[in-house]
Structures are given as structure tokens and as C-alpha cells.
Length: 352
Image 1 (cartoon, rainbow, N blue to C red):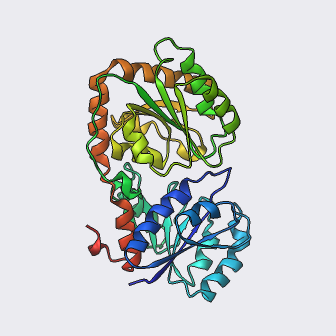
Image 2: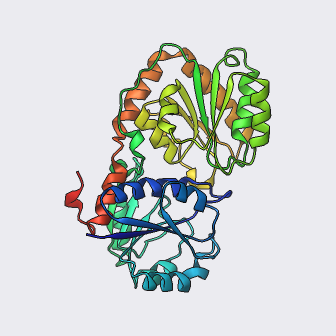
Image 3: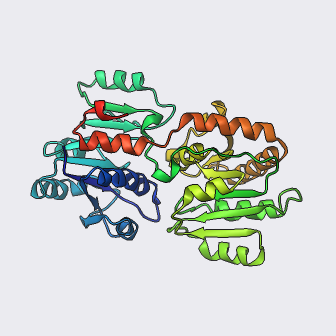
């Protein structure tokens, strides 16, 4: 059994906090299993969030999106701290970086993009639509033979998202808007402007999750001050509670879509970053409505969000069927499964 797990991850106003949040979900489960956890980050920007959860953080003082420049420093850190296993979550890894670090420790890598064959011990891709056979065929051509944890069984959600019943109300009264930790495109603000001009939607109650790196806080607070049906929520520690409180959600694609699935709230998803492309798969699978790509065609995406809200408002049975389909995909135990795998040195037999 591993007694001390290290997690290499970053978060800031550019890449937001999604990577940190999913690693925190796993870290909390690792701690419950009796092991210590230390986070290793490039700079101090995500430290407050991590420390709030009671975890140690070591800062490398490197550049978060140029990992090849930190290779030597991370290798020295791994050797100095006798790191047995390193859970890694970054889009900026390179093949050379992973090869060098993996000489000194076992790397478990969380992958969303399948950019290349990762020279690591284990690859995790928790997409509900990931193809394990495709992964294996790609790696067979390289001679790299990692183990794989693929599919929705490994979605790293916090315990609050463990499956509970969700009642789909006949009427839509409350709408949740969550557009990522930074919302650089101001999707929340523009969507609020649009619904407030729509006679069928203007009277609904809108609950907006404002991320810690949100660049539009001042404007959102101004808007909320003018409209009593707009409620802003910052530093949220009960996300599942707010999801279950609402009748419909509008959300950026990413891990949040899986949280919404676990809660069963009928949802509209959209893409706000390049790594979220392909979110239309949620609509094709009959789970959510898809509003488009906000960074490629912002106005069209906002307009589609409005149309989708109107559709949900007027189609109770459609919301009900979507809710059932969503909850069938996610059981909320993925973080525990990953933690058990990490702590038990890759023994999948311990994963229930």
C-alpha cells in the first residue's frame, strides 16, 4: 500500500480550476484510505484552493504551460521526496517530459485529449464515450504498454455527487448557469442579457456559479443588483445542492457535465475552450441539449442556449427522459475507484 501520494496539477485564470478540482476529489478519497497527499504545482495561484481542503502544497516555481523546462526540477523533487507514485493532470506534458520523470516514479496520467501515446504506468480517461479498444490499438503500435482506466466508472466526482433521486418538476422555475472557473468569453453575462429580454424566460430565477478566476465578477454583480431574480454564488462548497435545487442547467462542457449527470438535472451544454470540442456527443447520446461552440460562434451559441431553455420549459416529458438517461451514466464513485487503484499500487481487484 502507498502511504504518500503526490499530485502534479495546475490551475489559474487561464486554464481555470477544473484540473485541480478533479484531483482534489481523488485526493479526498486517498486521504480517507489512510494515505497522505501532497500537491505539486508550478506557481502559487492554485494554492489557496488546495489548502482550503487541508492538503499540503509544494510550489516548483516553474512555468505551468512549459513543462519541458521543469523536467530537471521535478525529477530532483521526485528523488528528494522518494515519490512512489505521481498522479499527473496537465495538458502540457510532452513525451520527453513523461519519459524522464517516469524513470524515477510511477506516473498515473489523467488524459482528456489522447494527443500521443503517453509513456506512463497508467492512463485514465473517464469520458463516458471513450473507446478502450481504440486506446489499446494506438499503444500497440508504439511498444508502450500502460494500463488503462477507461470510461465513466472513473469519473472523479466529489462525494456530494453520489447518486440521489431527483424530482423533475412540471414547471421550470430555477435555472443554473455554470460556465467554468474563468468564463473568459463572458457567456454567463451575455446569456443573462439574452434571457432578460425574452418574455418567456425573463421571470425565471437564475443561479450563476461564479468561479474564483472569473474575470467578469464586477459586471455580474452589477447585473444581479438590478435584477432580483439573478443570484450569484461564489466559493461554492455545495455544488450538488445547488444543482439539485434547479430545474435546468446551462453548463460549459467538462467535468461539470458529469456532475450534472450524477444529479440528474436536465442540461444544456456548450463549448467554451478548445479541449471541450466534441460536446455534441451529449446530444447524440440523448443525454443533453447541445448549444454549440461559444468561442467559435459566440452569438449563435447564446441564441441556441435561449432556444434550448425555451424547449425545456415547454417540454416536461423531454426533461424527464433526459434526467433518467443522465443518471444512468454516472454513479458518483469514480474518485474512490481511482484512489483505490493509486493507493493499492495498481490492483484493480480492489475497485468495486
